[in-house]
Amino acid sequence: MLPDYIAKTLPRSASTRAPWYLNTAPTYAGVFLWIGFYQSIASETLDRTNLSFSLIALFVAALLCFGLFYFAPAMLGMKTGLPLYVVGSSTFGTYGGYIMPGLLMGALQVGWYSVSTDLATRFILEGLGVPVNRSALPYILVAIAWAYAIAFIASSGIRYVARVALVANIIPFIMILVVFLRTSHGFAQYTPPKHEPILGFLLLIQVVTGFFATAGAAGTDFGMENRDRRDVMWGGIVGICLAILYAAGLPMLSLAGAHVQNPGFQSYDFDGLIRLIGGRLAQAVFFLYAVASIPGACFCGFIIGNSFSTMIPSVKRTRSTFAGVTISVLLAVSGVASHLVPFFQ
Image (cartoon, rainbow, N blue to C red; front, side, top):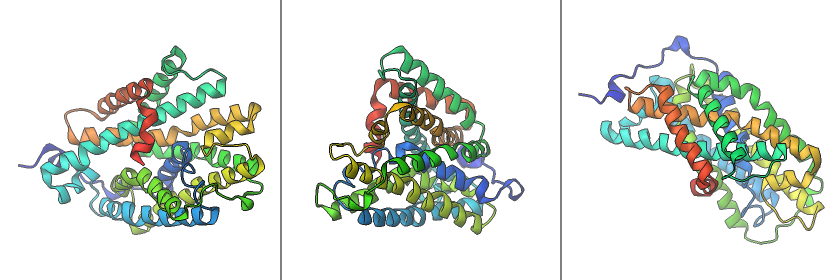
């Protein structure tokens, strides 16, 4: 007798699949264009090593993410038409697969969803000029409204998540470029305050791969939506490799330029860079970054629902998604979410 999460799962039919640029690429790109990825990517890395070494590290990390974390799971999903949790049972067994990668994947995404909720809520409040206080009513109300609105989109399925990503990804793509054009002048003259190039190089690879690891395993679920090997390849090259180089490379160049132009500037976080711009433009950027967090949050919400509804087939996807999101809201409001990013990395 097979467990329900295997016995009740049907493979995705070929007729329901779509090209890479309609599902895999935009959704994965949305993960990296989310500010949670590059918010602190230069901290403890760019202050240790020079720009050229940092960019090489990003290139190496992009190849590792594609080759070691994404490609094999995505190909298995494409060939079998089955989700990660069923495919994973070939490695961990029918009962081991229930926990790893089954329930564990869903639990990790609950944590990431809380991080997304916390960041988006903070950016909305900063964009509106409202003080950020997690115990205050404005933060709680915005966090609840944000989390459940995104959960509704995520519970609708990967096709709707990808459609949202296609539109919403444009915002952070442009915002990264705007900040780069405003702050990057003179980046070639940047000299790190510390001289620990090997450590900075390795830490940068660790940050990128640590951020991507669970999303890479979810490539199985994206592979289900792909028609053939070409879709798997191009979805990963554009949505992962190029997205990493753009979404991490330009912010690092921006921070390097900001330190050259402003010797008193101490921050290596991207939100510190936005505040350095100042004025209404900074407020607008904060607010737009909140909007730009939608694809990444949708991705987390989708995996939450996919994980728990697959492991516990008697619970509908919508209910499992909203249950996980409720926990995420509590983590955000309690302040736990603000400590999770370095833990995952």
